[in-house]
Amino acid sequence: FFFQSRSRHTRLQGDWSSDVCSSDLPPPPAAAGQFSQDEALIRSLLSRYRGQPDFQADPWKLRRSLEMEGAGLLEDWFLFQGGRGAQPSSGSRNRNVLVAAAAISILGELYGDRFQTLVLAGQPERLGEWRRGLQDCLGLSREDFGPTSGIVLFERAEALIERADRLEERGELPFIVVDAAERVVEIPLLQFPLWLAFAAGPDELLLEEDLY
Image: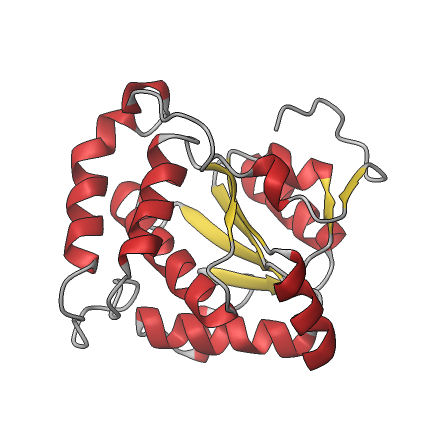
């Protein structure tokens, strides 16, 4: 994506998975991304996450095993897209949560507590799945969710954008995660330095409509 407008009314709508995913493009050298200096650490962590789960890991460290597909997705997101882009949904919210949790764990290694994760999912039930999944994958408690904590959950993109703006004004880094069920994505949301949008295919979107 290359968007200039920060208008609150500009939107991207529809099934956009085929347009924004980089999996069909030839991978350039890792040095092209902003994480090129951290390539060795990122690859090492992804390799570790594919091993046996570490149920006793400290909070904010990944406690579940990452599948090969998820590890490849994150390798592409970090090293190809520079931490800004959409990736194909893994087919279920639980799998997407695991991928996002692995990204949070890696970003924690890189930035410490200088970033905050902002999750957009347009219904309370979906946000509940995200909260429970991230708690399980990262060993978190309810106290880790909220405006003064590490993760904030949003139903509305406008509120998320306002929060991300405030974080940047304070010199902190917002990491934005967009649920696969979001059909409409505000373009201003995509102009922050770190965002990961899960792009669902038509079948997954139809299933979401049946469930909710």
